[in-house]
Figure 1 (spheres, rainbow, N blue to C red):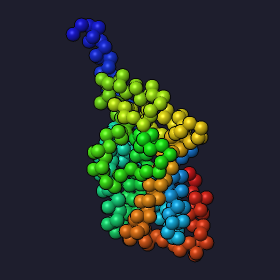
Figure 2: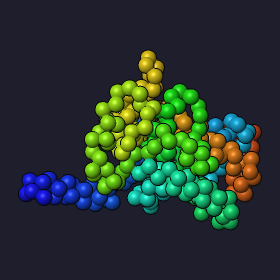
Figure 3: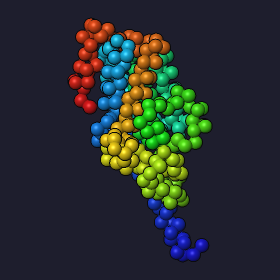
Length: 270
């Protein structure tokens, strides 16, 4: 190995080590505070849809526990890719989602159970922000089979971005292809990074593009819409499955004057 080659190798090694430590301290950004769509706003909108579909409002304390659980996934597990569907760990993310949802159903402690449900919702929401699902299903309300992860084995085009940069240190050219893409965003890009694929806020790289020409809907908007639909579906399914804690949280809309979710939405800052 020549001295020049050795220098280049050491430079990339140093960059890789720096990236590793940087990723270990930086939070895994999701639908974050920049928004305009955030984990809180998406979950609040799902509460409203849940009430419209079931004719039941959830109590404000229950909604707050679910939201707190959602936010806890970032606060307590920021570097665990299974909680954020990062690093192309889709199966691990789906497995953690199912575990949290099932644990919530069986949990006897009211607070713990609803927090676990909120964490499961966080994972489902992050999938749409961190994957290329929205690009593969533009303006088509098809939800991801997170509840049935084995289906992903036959969906080779679906991927999530690498937040940990170590696996791509020798594949920077392939990773760059994702940033260079101007059309055909529905494709699969080898070694695509989180920075390229994420739709966490309206100013993220992928969110600068509209889903379809002439329609003012960005990928941030579309990913958030899919996340809201899936969150609503999960809540309704848990209600139909007679989730004990969800049932204990129900208030007839007629008694809340159909404004329980709206009141919570107004009182809770996003």
